[in-house]
Image (cartoon, rainbow, N blue to C red; front, side, top):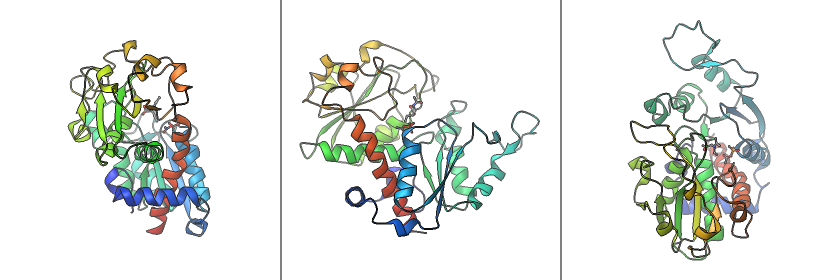
Length: 317
Ligand code: AN0
Ligand code: CP
């Protein structure tokens, strides 16, 4: 595997899960792979989990790690080609990317949807320029349309906790004060669609995701109906995808918050969220603190997903 940006890049899911299991049980078995290899992580947006778990994964593999936060200390980057650069951005991404590539062996990129242009976001303009111009393997640490390291960790977590072969997994929209990208729900849906689980998406009208991500999922607008018999509740806010409301907050209906009454409709479901989560907006204190909340082991599995992916990339160098 050279680049990792979507579920197809990991290949067969059963094999990927077996590799992840080996990694989790043998965290330091592959230190030779990363010797004298440098991972450079570049962040256009904030992060707690991705930053720490990916760095830990790289260290477990014996790699050196450099972290660059574009917004604190680096030159502001111009993204558009052809502009007269007389504004506030002193450097062009077309120089920055190959320079960054010359200092490392593998590049991780975090660049959220910017909501300026749906086309730029959905063609992954920034991530694809790194792939095209860096000369190095690139993996997504959440890009405009997907968050594959999160989704892989989510899948690993569901496999660890599931009590039936084909659990019912429900992705539910929940309210949030600010516009968030569709990357996490898109990506979660993409990975769930690659399994044989029963998969349901529930959200208010107007929050339909792109067809390519909805795939074979059942879309149920009645959240309570969707929760019936669920084995896993995966909550996430996202902004509208469909035109003309792309990137907008259409509703903040607190009735969509995940609370104990709704969890009582499920098959004693586990509660999941990628974090960071706004308590008493997305989920009540009682649910996230309940024994059925697996948000912490879910986050812990980010080391496993990152290490499995980095190991594959290092093995292909
Ligand atoms: C981001 C998002 O919704 O995509 C990152 C989640 C991992 N969340 C926020 O910006 C709060
Ligand atoms: N879940 C996740 O990616 O968290 P961070 O934004 O803190 O990295």
